[in-house]
Amino acid sequence: MQWLLFHRRCLRVVTAMRLLPAIAVVAALAAAVLSACGDSTTLEVSPPTVVEPTPSSITLELAGRHTTGIYNAGGAEIPAYDPASRRLFVVNGSSGTVDVLNIANPAAPALVGTITSASIGSGLGGINSVAIANGIVALAVEASPKTNPGVVAFYRAADLTRLSIVPVGALPDMVAFTPDGRFALTANEAEPNSYGAADSVDPEGSISIIDVGNVAAPTVRTAGFTAFNGQRDALRSAGVRIYGLPGRTSAGGPIVDPAGATVAQDLEPESITVSADGTRAWVTLQENNALAVVDIVSATVTQVLPLGFKDFSLAANALDASDRDLAPGFSAGAINFRNWRVLGMYQPDAIASYTVGGTTYLVTANEGDARDWPGLQEEVRVSTLALGGAALAQTGMAPCTDAGGAPVAVTANQCLGRLQVTNRTGLNSVTSTFDTLYAFGGRSFSIWNASTGALVWDSGDQLERRLAALYPQNFNASHTANTLDGRSTSKGPEPEAIAVQRFGSKTFAFIGLERIGGVMVYDITNPAAPSFVSYANSRNFAVTPGAATIPGASGNPATNTGDLGPEGILVIPAAQSPTNAPLLVVANEISGTTSIFRIVLQ
Image (cartoon, rainbow, N blue to C red; front, top):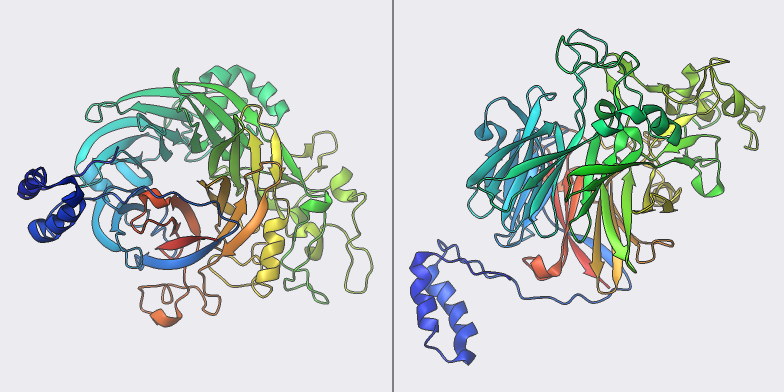
């Protein structure tokens, strides 16, 4: 039920309304709001219930944008929306704040407040994530240093009053509410600060489950992974990537396990989605290429599910693996899709869920991520590795050639030499060669069966092929440069963010592409056969990205670079929208902008 909140000065209006005939109530309310309450009132009238039709198609139209004027420093990262106050809360990683935007007019978002990590308490670092339910804002805040336990702070959305603070695990990277708002969950990523040094600390990953039934005094339970510590070899054999080096529980403390990080230390929770009934959660373990299944009622991790690998030798999974594949000099990039005997680790970042016919499905944005810490850097180019077996032979694949058509080694720049792969997987210990190559990310989004973890569908090479057709001069550009093929050697467009929304009888997925930018829209009503719907990119490729060309900076705003680096997205359904029409919000970390799109149902 939606409630009307009002200022004491408006009580006489409500009292007077009781005396009016029923037919005049709506008109009296509208007039009273305008004449009696004025701009100082806190009266919020929720938009009427909107029945959304079933669209045959969807397009995205840019409606408005808020800019921080901060370039390439995380000025806008994760958004959340409170429908009662019509406020967006956007994590600003650069300033260590959450920016509060009034979007009563989506064409002109207005900054109305900020929440700083410094105001929450001492010993804290940045704010990593925000979520909202029932007018309550939850902020996930890491500690300083990040290996110490973080906190979640709760605020009232309407007036930014802080309600409570609770401790959680190390580096809470995402916070999410259950659908009824009773529990808030955090994915505590617990990254190490380094490996093998005297001051190395590798905390245990975990999921905190916070009961906010009494938000003034919330209670916390922890779903950890220590029960899996004895299953390290079995998990590795199943495909879960557990490969951290020996770690310590505290700076200068004892090494926990000389054979390597424990399972609990090595698993790094990233993103969360919760079942419709609020009893289960699925959490991406990005670096581990796996999912954790969490029973919220008992606060336990019940399963760790490996996601397997994407076979880039299959016809539907072609990729452009080089940024130097343009003959004759092979010093520049070109669009060159082909198959290779390479396996991709899905390594999803964002995750969402939906239900069809009583079965829950998970939708993941397969960004990919490597560990790069002092003492462990796993991302290397193929040309630096000694290859053997199928990796070297590339049996069944078209030969790679020089400008004259003569075959060359697969380690050549125009072949696989420039591709970034891991040096932690695929080594043949007998021959000391890498017989299998594992690349980071799937360059795709996927749909999985939530009960079994089985892959139902993957977009294959569809995202990259569509970008090649739309932007032949800027294909696989980075989010800080317009260079053709700039990201072909490393994860391509990097699907980063994902949101799922039902309109009428259809369900759609919105996929944010971190590098080249923009949002892909797919109809996923049939999980086994999704179809492309539309794509929108508010980036301006006519302008070279830079601090002087982002919106709100010193450059000419008429020729600014637009939105760069989508990090977080959300859908505001029509029933909660200030315009009574659905909206899509995109937080862009490179341009420091929050863009609002109209979702046009056609």
